[in-house]
Amino acid sequence: MSKPRSVRRRLRLRPARAFTYSVLVLGALIAIFPFLWMILTSLKTYGEYALREPWPKALTLFPYRDLPPTEDVVVELHPVEEGAWGGAPRSAQPLLEGRITIERVSAPVAEQLARKGESPPLEVFVLAADVEEDIEGYDTFYFTVGSRVIQQETVRVQLGEGWKAPYYINAPDMERWGPQLIIVDNDPNHFVIRKTWRPTVMLIFNYIKSWYEADFARYTWNSVRLTFISVTGVVVFSTLAAYAFARMRFPGRNAIFTVFLATLMLPEVVTLIPNYAIVIQLDRFFENVLHIENAWLNNWTALTIPFMASTFSIFLLRQFFAQIPDELYDAALIDGCGHLRFLLQVVLPLSKAPLMSVIVLNGIWSWNAFLWPLIVTSDETWRPITVGLSKFTMEAAAEVHLMMAGAALTIIPILILYFFTQKQFTEGIATTGLKG
Image (tube, rainbow, N blue to C red; front, side, top):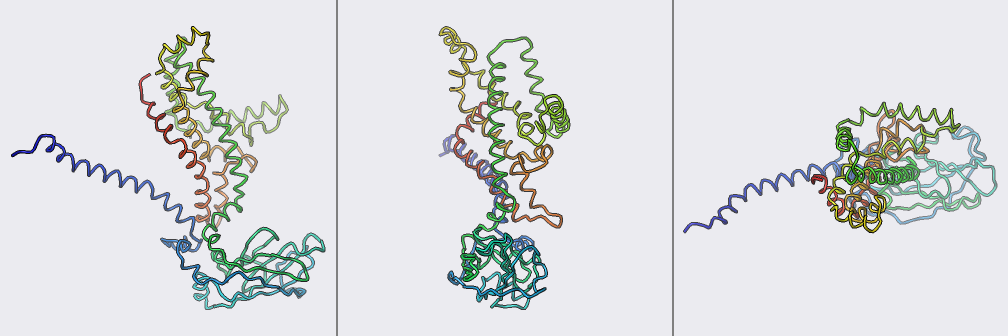
């Protein structure tokens, strides 16, 4: 007895369907691999990245095993002998020094010390300085291990800034493994240092360090402001232009729209120099005629206004606006509506999906902008967070582990935005190919 035709057809489709699913799964794994590499690298020390370690020790319990508890140590300070701290700042007076002992270290530090023929206990030298000439206490502190000369192994600590740690025997990437040293009382009569282990801080050490070293708070605020201004401008101008192309009749409409779409074929690099030349001339005009300095260069205007006319956004909205039935406009016209009122009260409420797509796409483009902001800005006043990542590129080498931590921080707002707008974004993109 032969099988029904529908059963035979399903059996023939199974190999093809299995192959399709396999290709999709493989593509998904390839696409997610760079993201996983970024996260893993952001948790590594500089040494682990340099040695191409596949898995960061921060994701294991190995570094935190049997750590000692928090301990407050009263440090006895003595006047510094002349020449003992050759690299100390001359303006820091008075200079006093003390010593604390580190009885135990974490496993990565122990391994590092063993390779150099060292082992705990370690003697940490503390230099307490007063650079503000007050009498309340010391305001600057230096820690070093194995050397009494202030060089690269020294960490400068301001009271109240939280935790720091000394570098261990020329191993600067091991400072994260602690113990962390916190100045809890800087009174000259009872100088107190707290030794503590903080595994959670050790885990996200690179994120904390990148946030403060690159001044990410400033750059993040700049990116938020620039993205908000750019997206607001794009929504306003794209909505008006798209409505004109979709609903209004004027001579040469189709020809103008065709030429307008042709600009999508121009690479961004091609328009970079013309845009920059225009911005320079505008800046000179504002300075010479209106006597306003830096009206464009190194300001939010050059970073946002040139991108408020988005060809793709206008095309996307125009495709959707063209689908709205003419009967709705006729009914609105009878009620006394003009084009602007019809756009605001009828068209836009029906166009939430494409509008959300415009917001998400332009938000991502504005947030990720790097080359243009780097060209038209000269200081940190308006530079976005993407430019802030370049601070981790040094002359000697790039601090990739900190750069990846900073990059992970930059994508968090985009992920949150997409998470809340995923449905509307997908629906809006689906309308792009519909015939108007």
